[in-house]
Length: 373
Image 1 (spheres, rainbow, N blue to C red):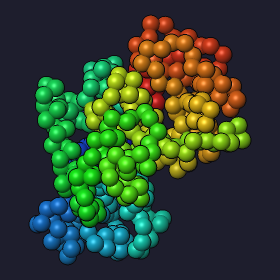
Image 2 (image 1 turned 120 degrees about the vertical axis):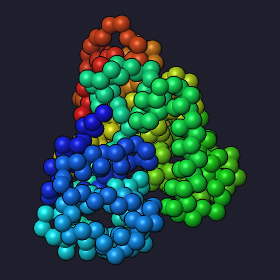
Image 3 (image 1 turned 90 degrees about the vertical axis):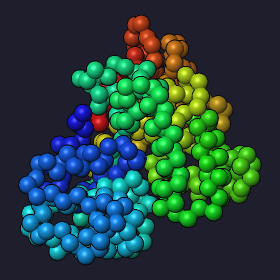
Image 4 (image 1 turned 180 degrees about the vertical axis):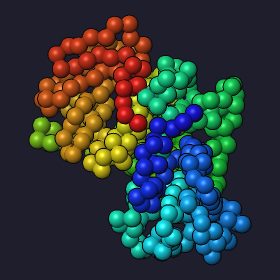
């Protein structure tokens, strides 16, 4: 199944280094190799392979290589300086694609700058928008149950999807986390991950997590940061302006893999909507270079809207996720009027769509299919 970002990535490779980043097993290597089919002499080298590692260190690929794919290069000490030198001295006609499962805002810290030398594309799990035109386009139940990662989503049996997820979490904790940073208490990190799986859709309190796990709040914050850096969870923080001066600051955390959510139907549905919206804002940011973000609205008096899509600092859309509730949420209506932006209440199963003032009540699948990816 072809990924929608393929064309944009192929275009950008001709101009600069392209970083293709995203969660492990989301399809980065497959897409990189697929892009290699457009070239006559591609070279794929993975830092996790001892043989490839030796080739990378001595820059031993052929001078005639027209696409150099470097997978998991961020695990190499001094990788930025190395990549800067490779790019600046490459033969004419050599394109460079770098893939990895850690966020670049963490990887950029310290060392030589790669400013002006790269574009970033963030590959996310499949969503209804990316599945449009496929047999799975309208199967929201499958996405809710299995998440959008290719292997569990496309597995023939649910048991195969469950086995994949068990191995995914085990590999994440035992390999990626330890490769990324030294962890003194891996069991505590595992407990934090388990607790977050049960608290999707609720504000996250680092103090509460520290009490539950028995470690310091700063350590909890560090461990959650590692889970963010490795594309396990992403945060959605409150947005504010003059109409909401007194905001509760605690973020919500959602999972890239919706199959990890342990909660009721409402929590799983909210996580799916969060992933789709987050994927949308990342795609817009990567494609246009403009500042696109996903926030929520929550005030101390209890008023809340699940999601606020923001472009260049200005809200563009408010979104509320409801499993079955068709009456317009009062907070959604209030802030849609106050901010003068459209409001959308997404309902998982809806017989009739309608518009009530500035708010549309929409069937989730149809609306999500219209997002950019």
